[in-house]
Image (cartoon, rainbow, N blue to C red):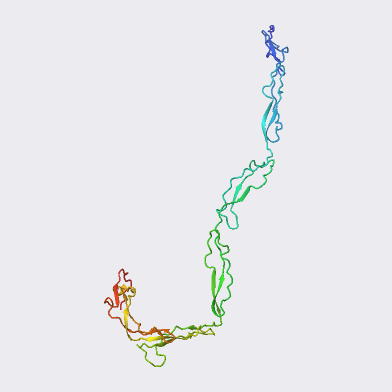
Amino acid sequence: GSWSSWSGWSQCSDSCNSDVIVPNRERGRSCSSPAPSNDTIQVQNCSELPTCPVDGSWGAWSPPGPCSTSCGEGLQLSMRVCDGPAPKYGGRLCDGPSTRSSVCQSACLVDGVWSGWSSWGECSSSCIPEGRDSIRYRWRSCSSPLPSMDPPGSDCHGDDVETESCKNLPHCPVDGGWGSWSPFSSCPVTCGVGLQESLRGCDNPAPKSGGRPCPGEGRRTSICQIKSHCPVDGQWSEWSQWKECKYPFGDRNIRCKMLGGSQIRDRHCRHRAHNGSMCSGNDLMERRVCYDVTGCYLKGSWDGWETWSLCSSSCEGESKRFRSRHCKPFYSNYNPTIGRQKEQATFFGNPLSDCGVTPDGKSKIQMQSCVNVPPCTEQPTHR
């Protein structure tokens, strides 16, 4: 067989050469029978083509740079280069920025600053206790701002609590308390029985500001006894009744006669013992002048009514009251004084006075029924 002529070259496989791939082109021929013994296609590099443009591509970002501030919030920069690959042969530059920033944060050293004081709290009591104060408090905190931990800032200086005494409060009532008992006093008597006393004061503490006084007594006593007998001073007995009125110069009857006599009464100094004092005064006997009118008939006159008696008990029947009047004798015929010394005369004995009929013709005793008497509450007695 025989080869045909080569065909014309085909178009290059690309329009430009790259650093990696060179475009090529082909041409062919055919062989009639028998089969060809050589190539039927011929390939040729298109070396005459211009080099292909290479677009730029970014390389990897660099690690972030140092923070722009030493504390607090700042910026760190990262960079990249348009070298992966770099643009060649009129290729396009890399798109986008070559730097980027990120926020960085580093702790600043912060010293603590006090907050403002709180309002004052309630007083510790509603009144001022004895020997103490009523206190109120206010607070503040080291939080405006707090001190930093890393790096460590300084704490606030000073106290976080402040106190002051509450003014214009009343003093609290203080109830009185007893002090200790004093020793008992010495026995106040030199003989017989006496009383010793021991005292205590309401001064532990003394009541103040309306407090209650001490309960109980501030004085106590104890019986003491001295073994020696006490002198017992004499005491006068009561005067005896006046003796009979007698004539002083012999045994002469003076009854119902206007002849003066005398009568005596006596007393005694009794109960004196253990060298006690005698009764004061020397009068063991008294004497007075008198007339003996015992049983003598004398004219007289009715005196006024006495006051009413108390009402009798209603348990004894009807309740009644009484009053009486008396016949008062006349002594006008007797000399009111007796003897040279003109002593005032007295009348001894009860005369038989004659006053005649009562002025109103009624009796010497009046009786009257009582009204509004409470009922009897006594239990009846059975005999």
